[in-house]
Image (cartoon, rainbow, N blue to C red; front, side, top):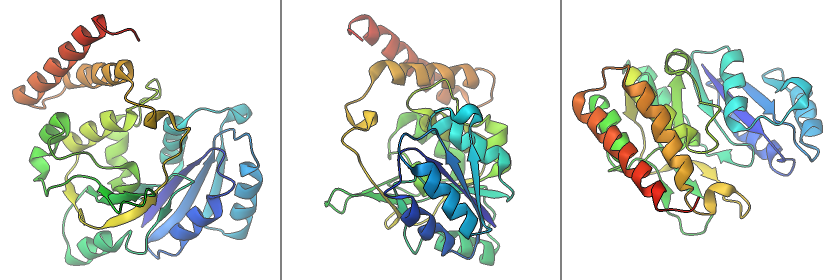
Length: 261
């Protein structure tokens, strides 16, 4: 069974559709709504949804603080009850095929700690996003560091809770690229396999005001690589992977000297 974690921030227009797209899947044991100090009526909608379904649980940060998506996902992970976890942003939704691969692998006895699949953006282009090649699990860390075949989206991942805990969860001090850091770590600790990389399992909304779409924040990328490098120094991820990370770190450090950020 799967716990689905949904951070909620100013999503009153979308939250019902998001939750409905999750509850229709029989393998989902619970939905955890993490209300992140919204400025609209999201908390009212969340309370109503939780009162209507025993499979929906609502969590709120102390003092109704706005802690961000990473802290909200971490709160959900810690309070989840089932061995596997999936994520969904409150303004997005799962497609009917979201857990087909998961069910297929379980029924066939295929061993895995996580599955990554594709998502599609609401941009009218029908272009999907995700890893573009089936990568052997023992090589995934390397290719995530290099970025050769792309990266997977949070909404397209299913992962064991124990692997997330071992990896240390999302680093809350990172404003951006927290997922890039965590995906490298879980790919090292767990057996992550590709699912349907040619067909989306979720639809993802891109907002004009979303800071991640205002261009790449160079300094935040450097900060993420610093965090990942500090972890990699303590782990046996292989000399080649450590060298790749260190070169990236130096590249960004030098580049920052010539940028005004």
